[in-house]
Image 1 (cartoon, rainbow, N blue to C red):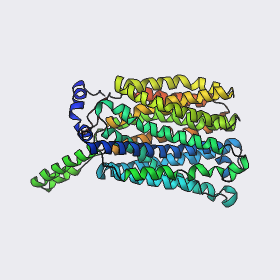
Image 2 (image 1 turned 135 degrees about the vertical axis):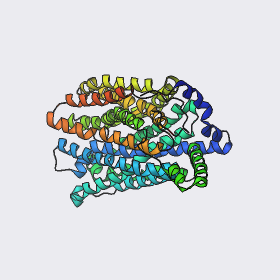
Image 3 (image 1 turned 90 degrees about the horizontal axis):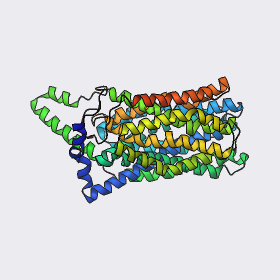
Image 4 (image 1 turned 120 degrees about the vertical axis):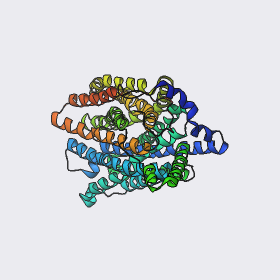
Length: 467
């Protein structure tokens, strides 16, 4: 595997004119800001959904949907339904990704935000186990699946849209706005939960937990309004013009040539696809252990006050507004590969001390430990990944390949990490296997960076992948 050669990198700012030409006009700048705001809100919606569920799974869903189970089994059951959303995500990534590569980014972004917003709102109206028995967790599983179906294409779609709108020199910084959206959603979810947790337990279990889910339609509505009024990306529009020109030329030569123009192989040059999976495992697994499992572990197993881990998520999300753009800037300044590699290395070093510190049960230490984990895994490394993922793939199948690779990586890491960690804890009664699991996933990301190309400034109009 070889990195992008220097001559191609040097030419990129000159050749990548689609975004620059659009931004040179007043209407183009309006399109850019609309797209930026809509991607921010859409990703905020996705991560508010998953943060709401992650917090609820660790704090309250055991009491609402699995009241007859022991605390550890209830935690395991809650995270089992949590994983269902991740199983749906690659299906959504393939379905909507192919649609986005053929019909445009905009139509998919409208569809995914509608599906996610409706599913999340309906979670807030599911009757409890006490009311309808096993149908309650069954409804939860179905809505989690639909939520995951939309989310499977939302994050990658937002990253592709921002990357294809951005000038080459600042693509890392601008693309990191996707991570800012995820951070905003996590912040919103943590803030709402901090308010909701002020209720007494009886009120919280009865109806208080529903408030965050019911309010999510406000974000979805705002994002949907903006997305209906944006133009598709300049890179996609240029690609459509090129394809149409090729079709006309092929049609003049005969029908058999037309078929060759329309044939787009998803698996052609698939090395970048597997690299993206490895990078995703190194980020997503540690991320969901830091902001998912650790919260349940602290609240349900260590029996620390529930407001402590929630406060940690809230503070980390505030700091994310500094950490995320900094990581995007560093990737523009020094390169995607070296920045990502350092984040993975720091995550490996973090894994074992983190659980030792959590076991102290001291609120200040617990809060600090969760904040550091989220700063490395859920904020910094994620800010680098957005631009790198877009640049790895050629324009022909960029949306499909990026979305499917990221979601398969999520299933192999983040989607199942809280469930696997809960099962390890239930079987061994100790955090040591979980710390090893954490370090191994970060290590996969670290090793992958040695096989990944440096893509900083790559021309996004190129049809072929970077490797």
